[in-house]
Length: 347
Image (cartoon, rainbow, N blue to C red):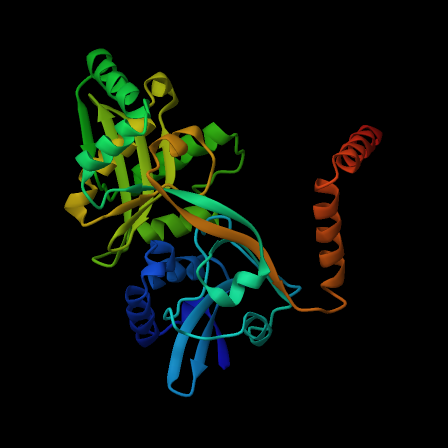
């Protein structure tokens, strides 16, 4: 296997078309995070974002997007909810060889699809991304959730009617291509999570703006907004591939928090998904209660590291193994926490 590494921004139109064709031929790669347009948006804002182009005797067989730090450690991006090699399901490669030929000493992953066999020996933990399966339509989804005992949707309906009575009639816009509303969403999100630096002015804001401006049948940014009367009460920015809508950047106006407007907006999105050709809303990895109540399926994801043995990676390996050992020993874990607390007081 040969691997040519290029800056992500240097992907040619021919590369993009081949990438897209490979992605659409492999059902494991349905997430919009595997679309070439997502990589192009990231690469435009991140100078260390690269793509390994896998080739065999017949030509290009796959693409491996990654970011590397100055010590040649490949790392996952916090805004990338799915990771893996864009290749046909029957493609063969060696994980360590791929990492080495990309010029890396190690590659850390935290949202890796579990179906890619070459990486399976390097899984350290398996988590999940909750899904709303809408392939049979919204009403069928609602009926299944009702049978399984969730009260989330019923409660949301009560809050929706209360919001209409007390504030004004609801108006839902599936996609609003306005940068000003995207900026408002990011300000709400920053305030909610207590971020002092504005996401709007960071490289993340630049990536989201580029995705918002990308509109094609196979990939597009989706800015959805819920109004009550003249007030914008919730907004969500995500991405859509042909079949999957990824729930990514939700936020709401804190003045209307008591109505749970974000959940109302999510259910409105689910109602309109079928008209967009969407079969799944992927809620993204996380244990938030609303995700657990609304999910009707899940996608397993892996955390781990592909690591080449070298003097520079040995300390990482020792440190990680030590942490894992301590976690499995409650007494040692309590001692470690006590030492850490004393050390912080000393500082």
